[in-house]
Image (cartoon, rainbow, N blue to C red; front, side):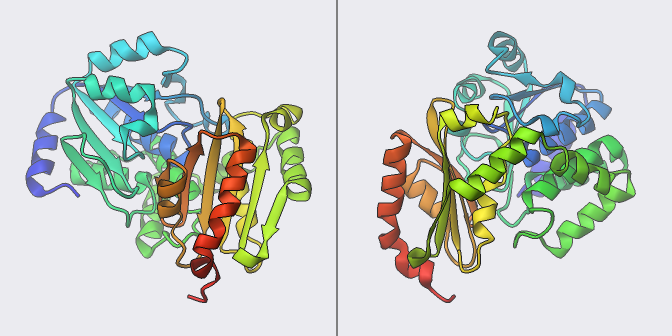
Length: 340
């Protein structure tokens, strides 16, 4: 966390207009975009020139958030993004713990002379920034952005635009306030955000109840045809090939939270999802109880995240990745079948 001296330094830095860039992780989710746009709307009130840059695109069900129209997609507007980063005074790095998580965008951030600030809640953050606002105890990066605004003495600047964004990230990263990361403080912050204008019911509808027909048909296909349950290891997983995504007219975000369905099966404590996307095999892992998917992803699938929610990637084919995954399970059988 930031100490008193660092808070004082940042207050001084932000007391005069600056060129500020906000970056977040590859394939941004609700917390990534909620924290980025929440911070964007806060800093704009303080008269800074602010630009949010994402490594690639993100789900359309997040496009409604205030400030979204000004976001730069690095993969589409690389030249513009590079020039903006080169001119920046400050770079906020939100919801990721390593520059590898933002791929080519990470090279530009590393080379920039700007002062860098990490705001994140993932485990094992790397040492690439001058300032670090980090704790794994936070339910989301949006919670930490709320804390940052409070630390800067600017809670009075919280408004509906900021609140809508931060509430979105808290809601999505806690699984609508049901994951173990949800604490009494999580609800207290949500309450304060609602008090300044966040429309909790409408936000839930915009994120979760605005599905396309093809997305629901893809979900039905996965549940009926693509679910594998390995009771011996209390494990269940889905997998999708690129041609299957094409068959269901896949759009970014259509498989969001799919892995969680496998975890709802009685007795299952480890769930996984493998998908051919972006010319690679992407992985998502979820768990209950004591099994640590962060360690599993870091050791076996070039990834990481949280104890109960992590992701990664594989350089192998989808079939090879699945063979590897299944072959690993005996090594973890004791942990997966433990009653603890």
